[in-house]
Image (cartoon, rainbow, N blue to C red; front, side, top):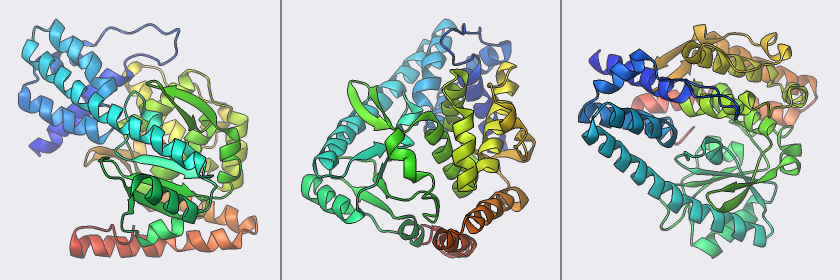
Length: 369
């Protein structure tokens, strides 16, 4: 119970550090609350280690520890400020190393006729995900050949879920992070081709730490994030809240297009619910949510009242909420006459059950999921 209380306290502190102020450029920073200052002043070395672990799992070390370092220094805790600075330096070194590889990989695949878009990983900037995710319209066999020839990369073991999703994980010598390539499909069973039809055509170039990468449009970022959080993992990380809140605060999202592609893919209810959860969570820390179109708020099925913090993440209950979203996606595919992708998606409950059984027997569901 003590660990649960500590984790909840750390979640509150990280959320305060990340969400105290709006993300729009014209917004002014808000002074830290008394509660935040009290939590910071009570931090010891062990507390900081636990906080780093939670921040790392949620991909927010860079964004949360920079203001934390300032607060520790202002509180006169020089040892804590130095410890936090070291954690930032360590994470900066990891990120710079990964980005240098990522640029080489993207460039090499482009040269080999396999242009790629960086999905998910750079959404967290200035943080970075724990692996490097790419999407391509190219044939997967060409990607495998190019990765092996250019980087001596080997394929990680593929689960049944990976095979259905047409997803490939590469182990690149010298790179601690896996490189995950999605070829032509998205979704847990690769059922989403509606989303991928326009993804590559709508990308834009983004400069990140001196490197230039092709990244999805804001609306596609939200769709991909929703697929991962609401239809695959059923939990939301702090980075997901911050990433999407920033897009919405800066008015970068075309809600009309988001509704159009989301509805065609059978994901609109999940998207709207995801955005409502994000807005309500942000509101609980800064007093105001993120700007949402009425079409979003009117379509959302539930909010943060159905989300619980457990095992380091904000978890959405599978029954009945996630099951209802799954049923809505499947029904849309069936009504669209998309029988092949409907069949893929219909395999999801069986895969989930098999993964749960394997998890119980072996401690890992990786071979299935």
